Amino acid sequence: MDGKILILGKLKVSEELKLKLEELELISIKISDSIGNGNYDKIVQLDLKRQDIIKSINPNHAVSFRNEISNLLKANDCQVREVEKNISKFQENSKYSLECFAAYKKK
Image 1: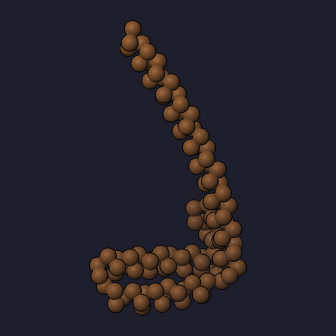
Image 2: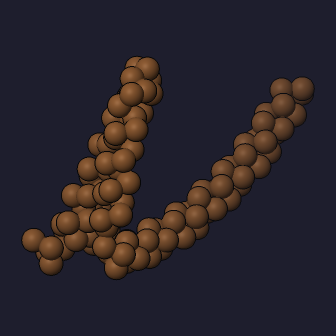
């Protein structure tokens, strides 16, 4: 199973890494729930389990995954800037339209 590659969104992730990441997510949710419910005695045990999983992740998988995430973040940043630019243009156009409506209203 270790050599198999699965698609997680647009990321190619080994099955082993995918399972570990899913387990980390579940543990993080349990930690958050324990904090919210005031069950602080469970947090240390869950955190130790979380740390063990992190230590067991193959560094090569992590580097590859980090590179994929980095590329997605760069693409996301570009898309956010484009959306912000479009919003700014829309706001300028809206302001101009409102000024025109206000001018016609005065007549």
